Structure formats: C-alpha cells, structure tokens
Image (cartoon, rainbow, N blue to C red; front, side, top):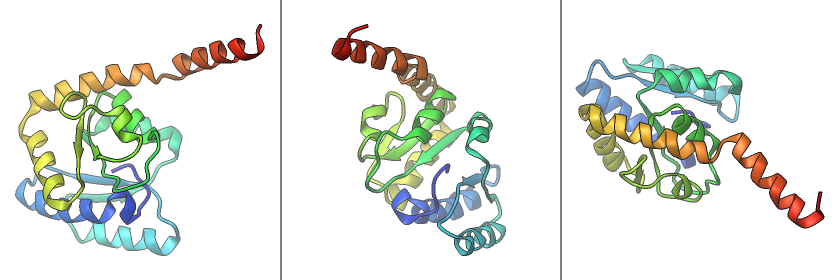
Length: 174
C-alpha cells in the first residue's frame, strides 16, 4: 500500500482486509508505505501495525520506492475518489506488479480491468476477494504484472518528453 494514510486513499479498507487475510494466510504480509498528515497519525499507524502480525508500517523517500515495488507481489491503490494519473500506479506497473485499484479518476486510464490489473468498487469485501484471488493464482498475478509493465512503457519519461517536444514544435516551430 504505497499511499498517503487517508481514508480517501483506501487506508481503512486495507487495514480491515489486512487483519483478515494475515489471519487466514500466515505467509502474507501487508506493507503500508506512506506518510500521514501529521506525526500523530503516523504514530497511530505504527502502533496499529505493531498489534497486527503480518502488517508493517514505514515510509521511505520517493527515490527508494522502486525497491519496495520490486519486493512486492501485489500493489494496492485502493483510492475511493479523486485520483488523477497516479504516479504510484505507474511505478507499480513499471515494476511488473499486479495492481488492484479503485475504479476512479485517472486509474481507469491506466488499468484495463482483468488485463493489466483489477479495478474495483473499493469496499473491504471486494478488496479481500480480489487480493485472495491473486494470492491463490500465481499465473494470473504474473500475467497482469507483465501486461502492466508493457502498459507503463507507454507512459515512460522519454516517451512523454518526445510527445511534448513534438507538440511544442507544432505550436512554436523549431
């Protein structure tokens, strides 16, 4: 869960599901990697994670997030509302990981449901079912991740820069 620690980013739903699935699957870990709005919120999250086996909370500088994505099997972007083109989603896709996200905003421009990720109406029951499906279906998880990596290449910085340069040349010339 590489997100800000807010309900609108699906934190509360993921916490419910993490408790259930770590009890059912002792080998599963949930890593909550993000910042809260203040020290108190982050302290509460640390305490919550310490009380729930299989749950970890920490944050790393943005430049180190690639290593977090590489280590994960499934990335959760469970936004409930108000999402633009999500950098965390693109980073997860570029790492070749299966992404489960909310059916909102710019996420629907990146993820094609069942092709390169899973789009959900975010609720604990739908999130739990989707995660459990990918826990138990390695082939599907890998296929989603491979297609996610291919999709992310379209959004690469080099590709973006070339498109902008062409657009600007079209407006102002060489």
